[in-house]
Image 1 (cartoon, one colour):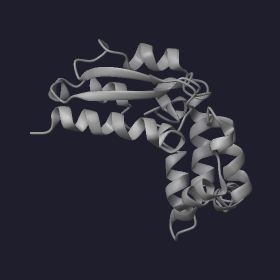
Image 2 (tube, rainbow, N blue to C red):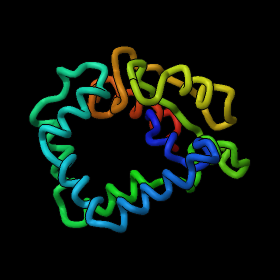
Image 3 (cartoon, rainbow, N blue to C red):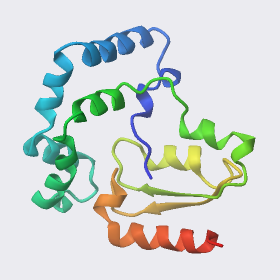
Length: 170
């Protein structure tokens, strides 16, 4: 479902930008600025604002949803996890994993929000559409859904996942 933070990956950055991004990521991980940044975004108002920008339907962002997402973010160690997440720059990307011949027989279903403002549908289709990897058996655009299909439209996403699992269960 709608991959995330791909443009922070070193392979997606212009060569001149890589040292700057790496320095910023290191600064956030290793200085008091990182935990301060985390505290600034780990608030109900900030989480709600971010979700309303990336959801296809901002009205789907409820206080209950914000609390459910924010809850784990207030646990001990959450700041370190968040800073590691935004510092992901050189591990494998999904398309590289899908290109691995050893994984060619593992079926993949890709679900993508048509209204994702961060990871555009056209990019998702060209990178993860049927035929881009032997593993990808379907690419399902989700109309009106943004970057977080599992939260925004569980009534649509969950049956798709169940159907996929049923098709591939022994």
